[in-house]
Amino acid sequence: MSLLIKNGRVITATDDYQADILVQGEKIVAIGKDLPAHDAEIIDASGLLVMPGGIDPHVHLDMPFMGTFSSDTHETGTRAALHGGTTTVIDFVLQKQGHSLREALDEWNSRASGTAVGDYSFHMAVTDFNPDTKAEIKTMVEQEGITSFKTFMAYKGALMIDDRQMTDLMQEVRQQGGMVTVHATNGDVIDYLVAKHVAEGKTSPLYHYLSQPEVTEAEASARFTDLANYTGCPGYIVHMTCEGALNAVRNATRRNQKVYVETCIQYLLLDASKYDQGFESAKWVMSPPLREAKDQETLWAGINQGLVNIVATDHCPFMWEQKLMGKDNFAKIPNGHPAIENRMELLFSEGVNKNRISLNKYVEVACTNPAKIFGMFPKKGTIAIGSDADIILFDPKEQHTISAATHHMNVDYSAYEGWPLTGRVKTVLLRGKVAVDKGECLVPKGYGQFIKRNKVSGKI
Ligand SMILES: [Zn+2]
Image 1 (tube, helix red, strand yellow):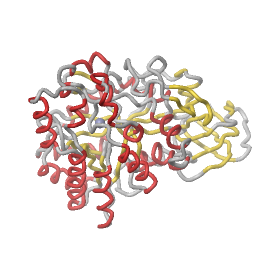
Image 2 (cartoon, helix red, strand yellow; image 1 turned 90 degrees about the vertical axis):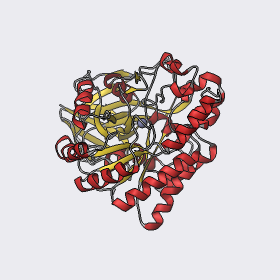
Image 3 (cartoon, protein in one colour; image 1 turned 180 degrees about the vertical axis):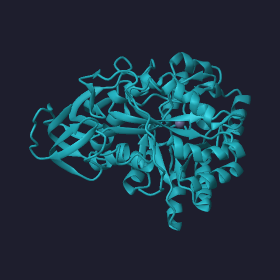
Image 4 (cartoon, protein in one colour; image 1 turned 90 degrees about the horizontal axis):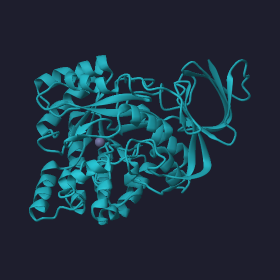
């Protein structure tokens, strides 16, 4: 089975040219001018951008959290991702305290395997680092292809590890060829502020925001960066939101250190004024919270300075009824918002169309860097001979609007309801198959494959 994509404008992280792309089986086998069709099925891409499938390296599907589960399963979440032009996601396996990494991986495999529609991989979140856990790191890297280990400096008593565990973990992960990623906020300070606000009867979603001031993220980002520098372990900070945190990484460049930085689409586009809407604000209760206009400016600039490497989502949707668990206490609102389907179109519309980033930078931060940093390049993340045929055909001019009434995520509200978009995903190929066309998903549940990842070098 061959497909020939004709007359498109091919965009990668570095190139921009008119060409045809020939796909055979799951791979791209030729790129050139006026390629002959032979018996290939022809897809006409005239007037369209032809880009690599998006990679969202930060999603939480079917995740047990705060007494409930995030509402998108691996099936609904990866299908919604495909509709939005994201062909691969990296989900988080959460170790339970007192249990092994293996048990957690088995649990996640039981939910994702045979149900995912799009391709996926896993990060392993280490929440209980002890000699037994330490012995499992090598197996995860070498046998399972899980090369990134997520840590939490917050959520004390549930997910947080302390600096002693962090240092030990970093030394082991470095030795095994992996990377440590981090939710970098100061858990002790946040716990204190949450308890103080609740004791004072300040229980609305606004106090979720006021319990996680910028300093909690800036301090932890600097501490993580220092420990990564000391241990020599490749480091990656997830969902960075603010100027103070990015400056910690900027300062580290002065001692020739590189720490990777991910931000998420919401931190570029939304701000803390969302917390002025009474309980409605629960839609945007996430950690870290939305910040200020000056932070958005810093993050956009950081992308262009090469300090911010990836734009992800931290997709973690909850139905409105689940959000209501916190109607009397912000600390009980399940944290997270839905965005897996909206990231590629929002970043194009707000980033490329509004001239904040170039077209090549768009592909770099949404597709190529996630593949490079997490050990999937050049199988994923680019358009090249030999790469997986994960390709999106994108109309840069079509106008449409985001709405919960038309989205495919399993959640009954949109965090971007009514948001006008210029630019739309028209057709999506995943490993050589037309996965989405004209708003229809054409691949079945279970088509998605687990992607084993290579060791990471900490260099891209
Ligand atoms: Zn997350």
